[in-house]
Amino acid sequence: MSLPLLFLGCATGVAALIDLMLQSDPTLAGELSLSAPLLFGFAGGLALFSAGHVQWSFRWQRLSLRVAYPLAMLVCAIAMDALTLPMSAALIIGPIAALLLAALLVRAHHARDEADCLAS
Image 1 (cartoon, one colour):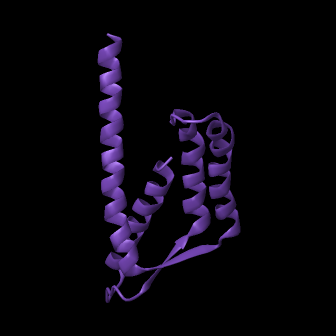
Image 2: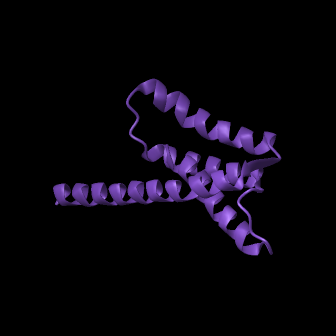
């Protein structure tokens, strides 16, 4: 269930880079304002659609977290108007989240290939 949080981090980093490129006088001292409904709405959708692929350890997790986690993100999308972060924090969070997301996807790809080999 880390996919939605990694998406939020990657989107924050990309938005920070775009904001720096579009500024006439780029500075790291400024703040980055993000659309919370857009970000948390997409993250809630990712959480909702990826919850079925998570291997839950306990039954209570399957029953409660599978619904509560995406619902919490969608509530954040509705409740928050904007998310403001320091530019330097956004530029630190973005690449770290992108690396973690890449590692997660590579690991999932290898696990899928191993499962295909065992099934053959």
